[in-house]
Figure 1 (cartoon, rainbow, N blue to C red):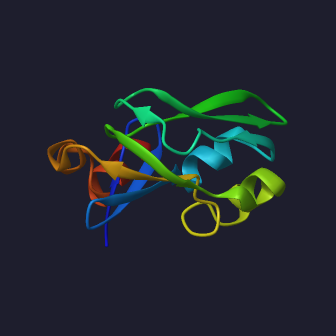
Figure 2 (cartoon, helix red, strand yellow):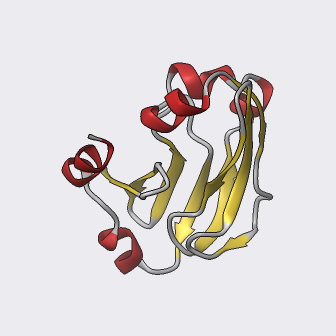
Length: 121
């Protein structure tokens, strides 16, 4: 499974043509304790950069953006029920949604882990 990152601190883990999307450890750390997550609707068509999920923390409200074009296939209900999962395990149990990629070239153009680590310093 290959992982890529956006400048907005989302990650996408690709398995075939299905990507698992969430926010990075860096992003959850900056947001603070999450108290609310609103997921996109299953079947929703997203374009790269669209607001996909709404996140509210004790510090701020933010959006998780779609890292690629595609269709939402599944959402992680566990983080709606318990948003703290995003804080405790953002890149595993705290994933947001799964998306069927429309164009793998968009995924390939995102940052790899080394480039993302350089971005966040």
